[in-house]
Length: 289
Length: 132
Image 1 (tube, rainbow over the protein chains, first blue to last red):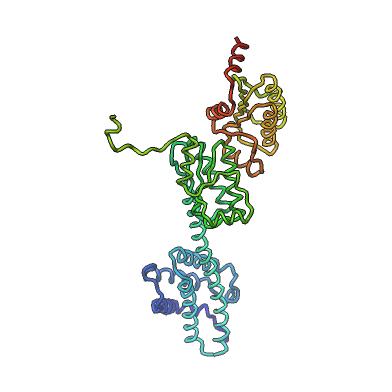
Image 2 (image 1 turned 45 degrees about the horizontal axis):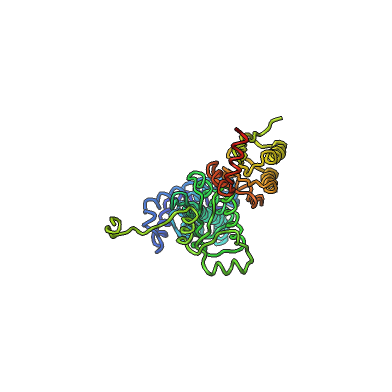
């Protein structure tokens, strides 16, 4: 005798919900700080409602059926919001696996014949495993979005152009220089040169962890572009290790003014702008006499 | 045919490119400028390209050529007012124009020319006499 398990489950809906929620509350990993019990109950109820109403005897064996689109959508919504709130993968997994266990528990009570029980459990297992995969895919996608956004933010905040003096710009570079970042750095620097009418730009690379031939190429490009604009570019903050690598790689930086520290670069800039920094005479008598 | 005006200012020639520079125009500018340098025995050439928004490798080469030709004719070339996008494009094309002097604007370009070219006072007097 075939069982219509969708009917059985529909009848036992409230019981399933209770078991499911109890299972999650029992779990030691439950994050009440991120997800209140009411929220948990609401999202469980919504998912179960949609799942049971779209489940029937035909699509039980066909997880790709369009009937489950809504279920997948809700699962995706829940896992994306969990990913953004900083849930770990285990908690998200427990959410879906808890549902599976509760459903099977009910089936166990209702179906007495072992053969039937096995067949139906097997079908249900398969269906819910597909849902777990969907959950994971969206969970990871949510996490990746967070990472991408952070990468963009880092790239944006780490390329400030500073006016250190009238006509002197400084650009401290922190982090690795790749092609995309060089482009941003170069554009920011050139725009600022035009905006401020500066004739000297200091590129400080003390925050760049390593210089390989590609990074050096990018630096040379930036310096050349600055020169084409009619400004001079000084590279400062070259650490001994970087000097070593540059020479070992055979990169020719002889056409570029390089200084060890930002201070010496600034001094050089003052010299070429014919400026002088003087100590103020504290002794007033000197001025009078 | 459209031509780019070349203005004489003392010992210098002033070229401001205000229109889109297509290939034929650039070539005629090259010819005109070299002849003008020869005729006026100018000591410096100032090219203002602040209105140029698009360049290609040909344009980059023409600018380089003008600088090299003027150099042979004993005149220094200063290119002023290059747009950031133009500078980036030229560098990406591998044309960093090593022979060309650059300045941010016309004012600074003139200062640079003046500092590079040691104009003899007598020369200047000659010029004044010729024009009077």
